[in-house]
Length: 147
Image 1 (cartoon, rainbow, N blue to C red):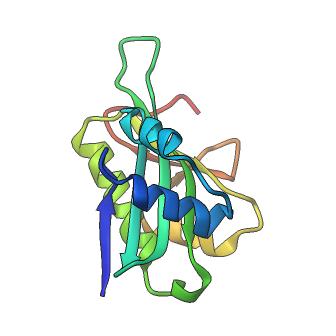
Image 2: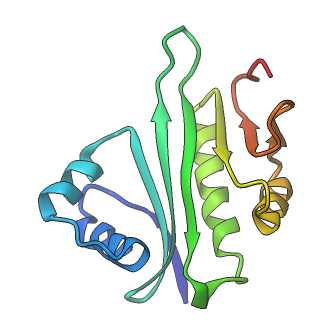
């Protein structure tokens, strides 16, 4: 059974597993703990018992004006053996819903022009394409960017 969660400060073993599965890199405990203690970094994951199925990495971007913060989704990955099970959709719902609950100005991500499955998913989730750049999707929270 696939379980979804947002990583907490106590989840260094999960972060190290994510990094190994998707990046083929070993991360030190110190690095994992530093990332998880950083309130501007958000990591969401899906796992099937001890197997990492996928993850989303997002960054809170504080604004310099009086507007609410923004959230940039930086990575969305699902392991090949778990694709086509709505895992990315479920994780992205978690991210977008939390950003809206927290009053983020907007959430956005950048994808490749030729990634048709990603475009279809982001549109299904209500993402709005940037007027001038057809690779940037927005989910509006407290505001709408000047496009």
